[in-house]
Length: 298
Image (cartoon, rainbow, N blue to C red; front, side, top):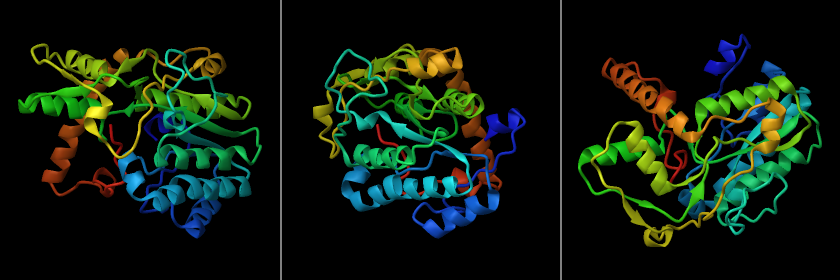
């Protein structure tokens, strides 16, 4: 929203209070009244293990609601970009980045429900409908992996992070710019991959986060995904091939380490601002947790 306004675009943002994703009629009402030229659909249930516990809700929000939004967008002749995920893949071609047309094989309810959303968007066959897969998203202000690592490090508790899952971290600011570029450049409809350059394990991501924050005296222990015994399986390899989008934009997203250097001070400032607002009784509803299924699990 901030970047859209910075570009002089008239943008209207909605959250679950204004447009609940389980309410087809409300979705039609909101988009019908706004009559947007383009819809950025970023809403989802992203709690991976929570989706395993509540699959029907995951499929309803990530799959069916996306179909409703695509339907409403088409009814007002608006273009649309749907933010999807690397979790539609199973991680088997280790070492080879996933192209946009790679075989789909989700390992979890979350991945399968997001794939349903993809199919709903692509099924319209419109040249201005896009599926934009991204991965390992972090950004200032919301719950994010770098902050979780820094909080743990500063608490003095032992820090252990998974070494056998590899992907591309993606900063929200860079992703937003890429999404707006798609809206501006109007490439052929279909699937695109948007993620920061570079790749790492979660362990390396944690080490790089500490370095970006100037913390050099804390050891990051190692563990495997199997050690965690989580309900939902994660792909061991989910590096996305971003060349298609880079060709359209004429540039790649910045390296994730560059993004981390920008993220850390911005996140600290966002937390300070939020704390100040809450102290004064001015915290916005959108800044508060929205239930156990909204926050991404790592």
